[in-house]
Amino acid sequence: MTRLLSDLSTASFRLPSIVSLGKERSAYSRPKEICHFSFDENRNLLLASNAALSKYYPQELPYNLHQGYPDDYTQRNDEEEYLDALLNAIQNEKLEKKPSFVTWRGIMTLIVCTPYQQRDDWELKASLVEGTIYLMQVKQPQAEQDPVNTYYGYKFEASFTGPIDGPSSEPPVVNTNIQYCSVFQAKLSRHNLILGGEVDCIHNDQYCELKTHKVIENDRMESSLRKYKMLKTYIQSHLAGVAYMIFGFKKDQEIVAVKEYKTSQIPVMCADHWNRHVCFNFGSKMTEIQSLECATIPGKEQLK
Image 1 (cartoon, one colour):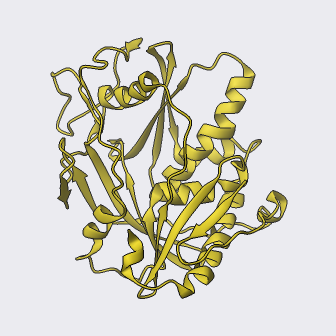
Image 2 (tube, helix red, strand yellow):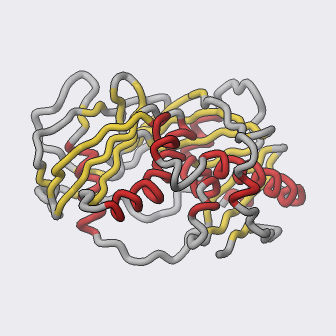
Image 3 (cartoon, one colour):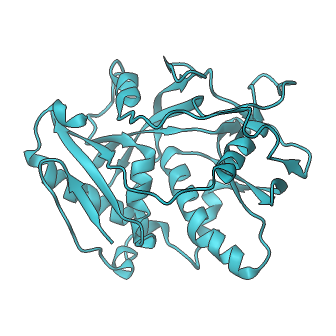
């Protein structure tokens, strides 16, 4: 396992034991949204816009996910977007407190999940600008994913959501350029964070995360779901104050069952597999390490 902070300095460290990390309750404050933005179908940034925000609409089951592939599938290019959209969104906001860290929610999820995902390596670029640390992830080589399965995940989101004012009569089209993002402020231990993250939809007037997973056929698969996917989904949802998680369970190319969870109930459900305090206490320790290591990193030029 490799954990690195890079740019002008490199830090490696020993992972504390899970037992030691779980001895105290963690300190992560309730996040407060400060702004939002959308990307349109051509990946144009729309500041202060909820044009891409959608609402959850259940569909009749089983639901065929394969229809539309590949003709109605638009994928955004793989060009690095850095923190540009997030920085543009907050530049005119009057912040209650100066942030210690600014980054994407996905990067903070990666850090916080580390105690239970020790097989996954990561590397971060960290830049200190006027007292705030900006974090980006250095891309790592990844195993090839089945493009059809990737499409199925996006198709579930597109098919089970629609405009806020009512479901569309048009067939769902998958365009991964389109995104709605929330920007929020929270506190982890003594550090103020600004995080930006995609929101899949709203459900019961609150933010909701949508995921797909293979249909559960035995106890081993149930255990794996709770140990791995529910951990990551819970952390990314809890970080952003997302109230609901909805899983679509698929068999072959069909969604055959859908289950709704309240995010707040997940730690109790998964208590035999992980402890959220371990995760957030590790995140607290990591922010301390990053603060120390970034003390010598100058200049905005390091953001790209």
